Length: 420
Image (cartoon, rainbow, N blue to C red; front, side, top):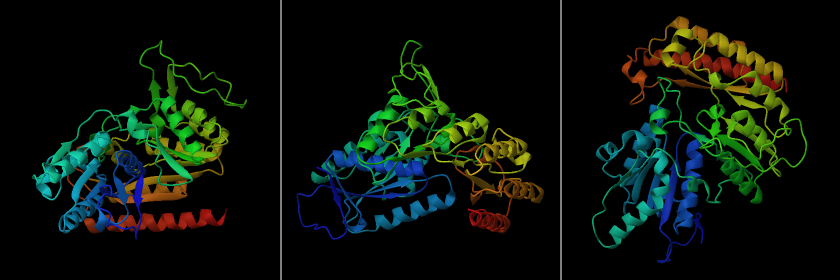
């Protein structure tokens, strides 16, 4: 039976399930992972509490993309380690995959380290820990990292955090190896879920009354699922009604690409709306934009990080496109979807970034006129190629450039909003 404790619940029942408090840091993928972990724990008889002081276990689903996020997690682990009685403490996800057993040395209070693709093992690992504690034995630390692929069963629990919306993962990991990015090392190589399983998960959400979906992936528009063999069929429910995008036969195919997946999702009966994040410019195209324009259930929103407007810096970042190419993509998007929302990510202070490089970034930001932009200051990431480069842009200079772009984007956002 599912047991989610709310503030004020009685804690006097000695037969209550072991209570787990989950703290989440970072992106939407981490949010979905926390939701998955919650569902798995509930199915295995654990309770979920919203009050950390009532928890037998604290799991930190931790982001490793920026230094600030990591520092916050280490600080929280230190705080939880001082609680009396001390809960079982688990480091889960990207930071766990990055630090592995060295996390135990850095923070002795940690009892459990579980990587991104090993999260399906968490219920059993916790049962083993509590069984050891019940026998009055010293807790043996548990390490489970490095699994190449995530088991499909982790997406099967029906628990959802929100009543009206759900994230649905379509792909995991990344093959781009941008020089500043830790994702390929902590989420591992790019893998795509079977479209049949994606459809089943969405239909399961619809049965629960959830009719708004966001498709997730680190590089979502690189999606391409291939059957194991040319003779294997991918069986997708046929579209219920004719439409411009329902002329193809989906019942049997060996390859499904991202645009085709969008069409399949759009055709799912009972779905009201859906969107997707995050896209990479090298995999974006006018064909994708036209599909976005035509599919009636798909939100007209595109998050397309450009990171830098300097071709020299883009090459150092290993982004795989030029500023000219990005500007052309933005132009095509605005032309095909005039009312579409466009957002982006930007990094300032990348190693070797000169004032001229920065001004090229500012120029691109102002030329495209994004509805929203997430602007970050570069920080070296463990195990990335950029970690070997000298972090030579001073902190105060990063702050200055960051503020300039923030102020510029805020003005653009205000102006665009006033026209709607």
